[in-house]
Length: 545
Ligand SMILES: [Fe+2]
Image (cartoon, rainbow, N blue to C red; front, side, top):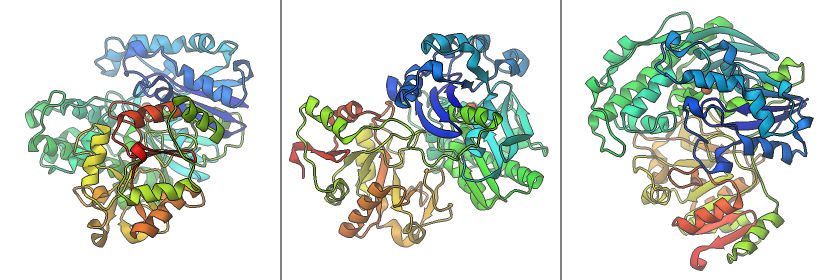
């Protein structure tokens, strides 16, 4: 079967294509439209579809809309209820439901030839769950989904044994750990359902001194669910406007919310493991992008293995929805092999972009070795290789790279990207060298969804990637799965003695990650980057170094 997955309801609109149980492609609309997160998560934007991402998924597989057997839409309006009945303060929510009801017609209009009767509604949290339990490389797992909200719940705890999902618990709205975290994100002057990771980063600068208050308001109920009573945030720390300076109170509030989230999550996973007796936990939903919480779940929770969907936010529900329909139809579902599910270009196509842009370039004998040389000379390199990543992390396809041995390179990277100075950058490391340098978090860690302690002897050697609390959010590189990145790391180590480079996403503040060669050239043209490695080609600024 050819199944198109579509996420359009809240934010991070995306499309995915699953053929005969195998994930063929997946991409977020933002990479095409160049609008971060695709759209704002407001009810009156729910009609907007991932039109370009869906069209690309079909086109790249040589399919026409009429060839599609089923469309999985990752929200089921039949499960929703009026917002006021659900305790939600959202006077326009009925628009969202109404647009979801009309999605088959909208989809048929956006993709002429598509049969509107092929559209199937997949409950939002079932789509998240499938993106974890069916995409993970385990035949059986307990699955935990937590996000802001779906139709009427904010959570699902269950189990995949074979292709079928057994739901064991779900938490009705308005109680929501995701919405709670979004509330505090907004209170701290950041953009809700976008900047939650900044709260997590800020938390490491604070002390959790508001925990007693939060423990009273946010607590597990012993049956797999939880309560989130409303919290008077302003009584704990003054509300911040956009860009306003934060104080210790704000860092302490972030630390308290983060710590309480971790405590409740640990209770939920303990309950789940008692119910299933499983050894593997798979996770998805926006809350599962919280790598600090994931690390505590892996380190202190009862499961032996924890696997998190790299596109854990709503983007991943297009992939999960399509996998769910495939499994429901009895197709053998193949776990996803990696997150490189987006667009890619041949060497000839890439060279044509460079010729069109009249940019001087060279073709070194080995681009990995040439980049290692640039990095060893302390250059910042934009790295554009292969198919783009699905999900919010740069995983060696669309990255900005730098030398980790100079503390000032954290500042340089944040300057290139035009973002806050408290934001950390992350290391990529050869998988076989990771255990010598990074502890506590699970290894291997290919998707940057956990944090690790940096061994004391290494903190001074790679200061750019060591966070203020002595941790780092690593990506381990398997040189067989990622030969080009592996070779670049190996050559860098040969020159510097460090099997680690700084890796952050290739984009500037407020923009989506670079996706196509034009984006790469535009980013290179406007940001203080020394070289661009695009396919086998190297573009050096002013013939640097
Ligand atoms: Fe979600």
